Image (cartoon, rainbow, N blue to C red; front, side):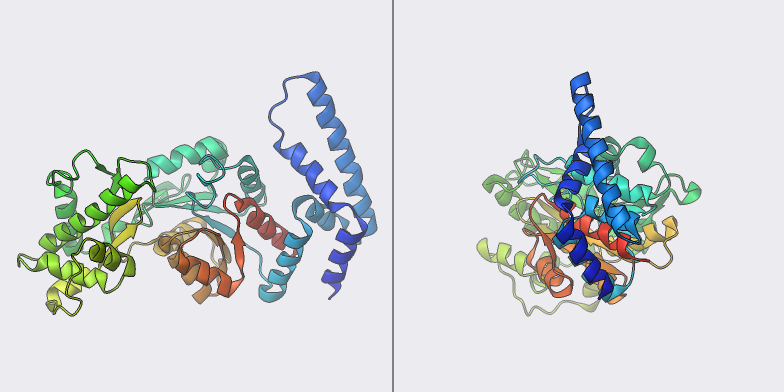
Length: 406
C-alpha cells in the first residue's frame, strides 16, 4: 500500500494539475516567433522547475514522483499503479494502429495530435521501441511517420512498421532484416490465388463499379477502396458490391467448378455476420449448409475476406495478420520478453490484443468507437477505453506505469 499512500500525498498535497499543465506548455508550444513569447515560455519553464523541485524535496524518490506529476493526471497515475500491482511489468514496446486510433477524423481532422507525437518521442527517449501497425501501404506509413515523428527517430533502429496488416515488416537500420516480406513464405498454391484475384480485380470490374472503386497499392493483399468519402452512403454501396464481386473472383480462383463463387459466399458468410448481412441485404444470402469440397475448403482456410463497412473489402492470408507482423517486428527490434501496449480499433488489431493476452505479454487499449469485439476484449481485460481522438490519455497511463516500475 505504500505506493498508493505516496500517490495520495502527491496528488493531495501538491498542485499536480498545474505541474502537468506547465510541462505541456513547455513541451508543446510551437516554435516561438517573438521575444515576448520566448520570455513567457522561459517564465513558465522556471516556474515548472520550481514546482518539480518542491516535489523532489518532499519524497525520498523525488525525481520519480516529480516526473509522474508532470506527465499523468491523478486518475492516470492510479490506473498505472493498479496495472503495476497486477502485472509487475514495464511496457517495453508500443504497438500502435494509426487510423481512428492515434488520429481520428472525428475530432482531430485526421492528423495525429501534437500531444500524441510528443509522448511518442518521450517513449523513444526512454528506449521503448515503437511498432506502427496498420493496414496501409508501406509508402503511406513511412510518409506520415517521418512527417510526424521526424526522419531521425524513424531511422533510429528502434522503430518498426508492420504494414498491410502483417504482410511485411519494415525496420530501418537493421541491415538485411530492414525489410521482411512475410508473404514470401506462403505456399505457392496460396500465392497463386492472390495473383489471380489481383490480376482480374480491376480488369474485370462490372460496369456498376467502374469509376467507383480503386485498388489500394498493396504489395500483396488485394484491397478495394471506394472513390467516395469513407463512411458515406455511396461508399457503403460500392464496398458492399465490391465485397461480393471479390468473393466471386476468389471462388473462380480456387476452383474451376462453376459452384466456386457460391461456395466462397457460403464459407465466409457462415463465419462473419457482417458478410452474411451484406449478402442478405442484397437478397443473395447463400445456402449456409452448402457442402464445400475438401480441397476448396482447405484453400479457403488459408485466406481471409475482410469487410470494413463503407471503407474497404480486402483479401488477405490467414497466416499474415497484424499479430504475426508484430512478432516479426519485435524479433527484429530485439525485444525478447515483450510486454507491449497494443492500441487499435478494428478486427485486425484484435488479433494482436488476443495474442498479447494469451501470452501474458501486454495490455490492450481502444477508442470508444472501436468494433464490438475489440471493445469487449479491452473491457474484459484492463478497461483501457479512451475517448475518440484522446490516445494521449492511455499513452500517459503507460508512461506513468513505467515510472512506477522499480
